Image 1 (tube, rainbow, N blue to C red):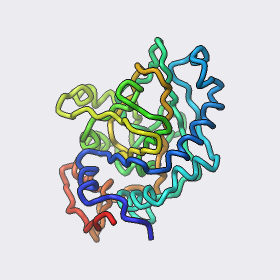
Image 2: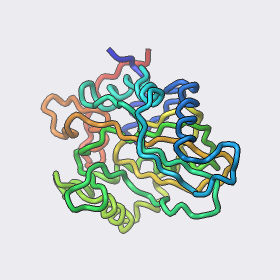
Image 3: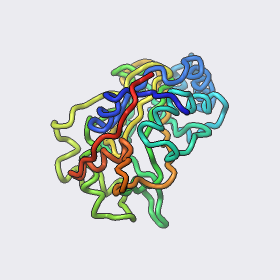
Length: 274
């Protein structure tokens, strides 16, 4: 049995705010090992800023042992069970993708507000998502370097995951392109709305942010001095979200979708943090 990683308050805040920050979710020494591997893959040198020639370098994925360790700590496995539900997610064998951001004068040109797509229909050139979150149980942000306000932390619109379900519901099982969704949200005034506060995914190596799959978020340019190393993998689901459970055993991820649709479900009994 996995540990009770989150308190009841943290779980309820996840439902209403769309994310939870877990400081020290994996050991800092493991984060340092991962960062050393990623530096080698970038082809740049941590000691020579002249080699930092691009604002962002993307690495698809890594299955090296340090990344497997980072993704499978008791704290994280317990949190997955609490947010998604036991047996409703698949263990990760590595991590990725890695958008590594460098201090650089050029515009990264990838810093628009969006919700992450998770599957690519035949003939599509942009990833899609649907109301039952096919292909993604959680969006996760793993920090491998210290990330302060100037170090290109991911921007988060707090509570914005609740704005997304009404746009996805009419699209049914097929879902819609993440690009089309972003345009619809923008046309409705939801991307620039001040009613959703801004949070920054700052923290230390070993911290993890577990985010609702519909959370609206964005990158930003690096204004600091030390490159930022982060992974943003999905937690893969076993099946899709169920939004009509006869037994009412909805996960917090499902409850948030129902809340966004105006069909709030009662919280399940949550054990306190051990």
